[in-house]
Each structure stands twice: as C-alpha cells, then as structure tokens.
Image (cartoon, rainbow, N blue to C red; front, side, top):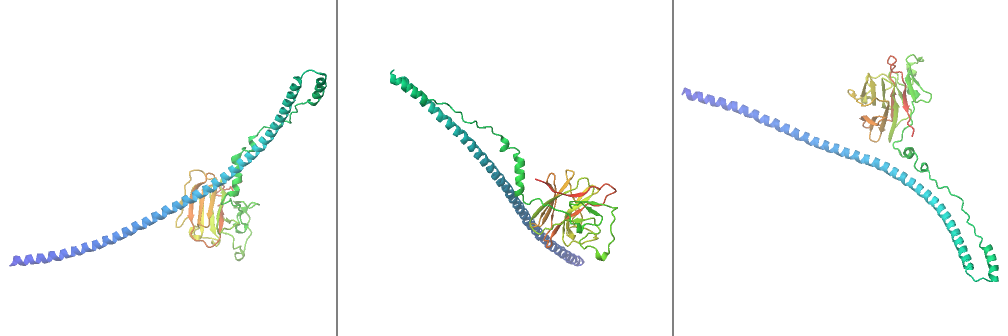
Length: 365
C-alpha cells in the first residue's frame, strides 16, 4: 500500500511538472510566432525598400539619359549647322568655278566655229571673188581667247573646323542647366574679423583687425558673431544652382548652404539639425557636418575647389571635387520653407597656416 501511495505521488508530481513545461512550450511557440511575424514584416519592409531603391535608381537612370539626350541634341544641332554652313560655302565656291568653266567653254566653241568657217572657205575653188571673201572673213574671224580672272580656290579648314571643340564648348554655355551661378558675399552678414575683397568674391580672416565696438542691442541681426562666417548675397527657393569655391592653400574651411532663419550667433553645434548643410576641413580631415555626429568624407585627390550643387526641387545639396567633378557627399535636406543661402567660413588663421583667402570661383566658358 505504501508503494502505491508513492507511485500516485510521483505521478501527480510528474504531471504537474509536465504541465508547467508544456505551458513554457506554448509560451515559447507564441514568442517564436511573434518573432516570425516580425521577421516576415521586416522581410516585407525590406522588399518594399529594395523596390523603392530600385525604382529610384531607375528614375536617376532616366534622368541621366535625358540629360545626355539634351547634350546629344545640342551637339547634333551644332553639327548640322556647321555642315550646312560648309555645304553652302561649297556650293558657292563650286558655282563660281562652274560659271568660269562655262565661260571658257563658250570661248572654246567660238574658236572652233571660227576654225570651221575658215576651213570651209579654204576648201572653196580659187577665184577673184574668194580672195575678197577671205580678206573680209579674216577680219570677222579675229577671235582671241580671253582668260577669265583667276579664282582663289584655296580652302582653309580653320573657317569650318579650327578649334571646333573649344568653339562648341563656348556655345554650350547657353544650354547649360543649371548655369554656373555668379555669386558674391553679403557684407551685412560677415563676421567683424572677416575682410571681403572689393568685388566681394574673396574673404580672409584678420585676427589683428580693429573691430569697432558695438552695442549688443544695436548689432546687425544678419551678422554671425561667433563663427567666422559670411553668407551669400543671393538666396534660392526653387530650381537648380551650381557654384564653386576656391579652397587652394587653406588648411581649414567650411562651405555649404544654410536656411535664411539660421541662428545668428553662438551655437552649441552647426549641423543639419540647425538648418545648415556644410562640408568642413579641419586638421587634415574632411567631414560632412551631419547630426548627431559628423560623417567622414574621403577624397582620392587634394581639393583645390569645391563644387556645390543645390537642387531646391529635390531638396538636396551635393558637393564635388570641382576639378574632377567627382562626388564627395550629398545631403537630403527635407522640406525647407525658408530661402536657402550659400554659406562660407574661411576659419581662423591657424597660427599662420590658414592665411589663404576663401574665394568664389567663377568658371569662364
């Protein structure tokens, strides 16, 4: 009887333990099912994202093809105009020579008719009448060949070819979009320690510059007072714009764009969070001033000029090595309701290592 009691106790204990373990299995299954749902959701989200990325690249491909089609159309039209000019000049020159050829041929026929007339008279029987007729005929048949004035038939290819690529390159300026923006600095926004060139296209930092004392309440609200910055005098709200900034010889700089309502004074940080999209060089390292931390930007070549491309409609700003046009970095700005201004910071002198000016470069075509 004692043995049976032990068996019942063990059975009850085992069943209770088994029930607990089964409950854990059920909970585990539920958890795994939830994980499966999350996995499928993540898979679907990734599929949708991959599809969106693929569509975006296809859209960019169409845009590239459209841009090159515009260039092809421009070059084709230029080619047709050049060939038409060549054909007209060829037809004009050939017509002049053909007219000269006709005049010479007419004289040749007149000379041949004169010979034939004289030969006919020569074959007639001798008579006193023939003598008289020959004398009169000789007077009538005094035909001389008058050579037409010579025609210059030399053709210089320089009139049609010459520096054809350079010529087309200059003509292409009218079809460039975006055209190269002719920008200047806005002196009203320049930090007091910055000096602008008379044409407002160059800026340098002058540490020893005598700065007039200002009443803080009367300071120009446009001016930056902490960072050594100056804004562009032009603002952009739509369309595409491109400009270049000369950074040759500088060990530190910062360029890009900023919103019109960007804070004017001391800031904890000047990143995309503050409405500034800029590229910066400091201590030999180039970074994009992203939030929450800067992004390292690598370039395979030493930078002499920075190209800045602002696409207001697509809400993007991109930076390039302006010499090679290799892309450096792109920001997606998102919806910006305020005008966008070019932003420039030549930085301090860095103990004489950064004395070169920061200049707006205006390429000429």
